[in-house]
Length: 419
Ligand code: ADP
Image 1 (cartoon, protein in one colour):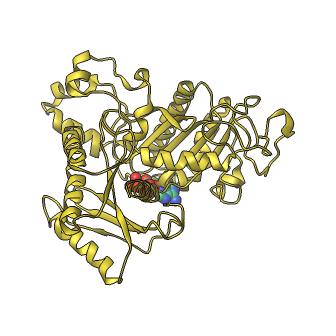
Image 2 (image 1 turned 45 degrees about the vertical axis):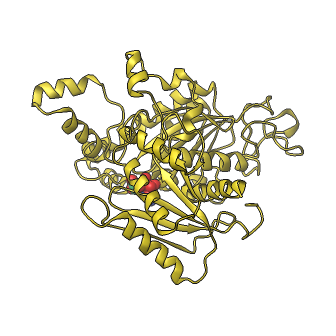
Image 3 (image 1 turned 60 degrees about the horizontal axis):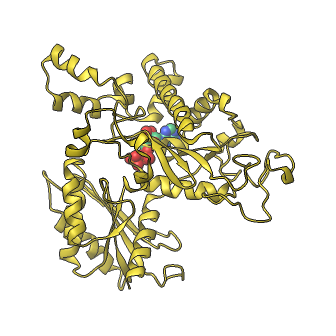
């Protein structure tokens, strides 16, 4: 069983991109990582995935006997087919291949990684963990675009959402920090703050407030903002995704490092007319030269933007303003999708580290019942069980994400269930 320490073995977690393979050897029980690294210059312009995996597995052999339970792969697109992680077989490989049209840069790299492991270590169980899977619980009202029906039926045009592995990890952790199982029914003897029997919540109260006060068994309603190089936010009710900001591709929604997020779709035809440039060229500009980089003209990195804005750089200041404006609007929209909010959770590079972004977003969302605790926010919630808000009807938390650990746990779970 995966639950007994050590017995499940270690998991090789692989994230195969178009030009690199990130790898980590992860203990699914403890989260320890005895080995991790990145192989560069792979793919079209460099070496093969097979050579990279031979080297990576060679590093493992150098360490003597490693009890490897399996390999877990991050796969970007699982289409409508995969709502959970799966053991890889030929049929799963075919399905991942069929979704390459939806993720032309990412899925072929994942396939190459899986095939390389199969060649270098035949018989090693492999698991695919999809960025899209967690969002398969979204209702049609959230995932359908108002476009001609055959775009959906023939071309699979719908909203899928991404960062699902991170959302699963962070929402489970947030529920635990809040003392509230995701689906409701907080543990006996832990009356939630705000519940009639709990008295008044106070600063530093160990249980970080309760959701729907007066409805202790109600589903926990979270908005999680995953703010990394790619940024998205998701509405999670009772541990299930009900809405998210990314769509058919990871370009929809929030402002990101180099991606525009939402724009008027009419902009493409207008610019094609004005500039004579084609769809692929314009889409590339929205993907790689927009976002914080496009607005600031200098950087896609939130640290650089924040420092420049504080020095009075106007374009960096505007980039930050647009980023915060769009994020605050998205959180309010996702709150409507949930029918109310118990906690707003920040994660990933910007979410875990930017006191400024969190502070400015919370300042915009006072009307939802959120209020920043400046000292707790400055400490990234590290001394307050993740909490960065003052006691009130809605909490704000910082919860570091760990997608590698989630992939390792899924792999151990599926491999041990198969045995
Ligand atoms: P990825 O999506 O590639 O995993 P990360 O989650 O590491 O990326 O997030 C990268 C982003 O986090 C960058 O915009 C970076 O500027 C931002 N970031 C990291 N540390 C800080 C910090 N101390 N303050 C503000 N932003 C930060």
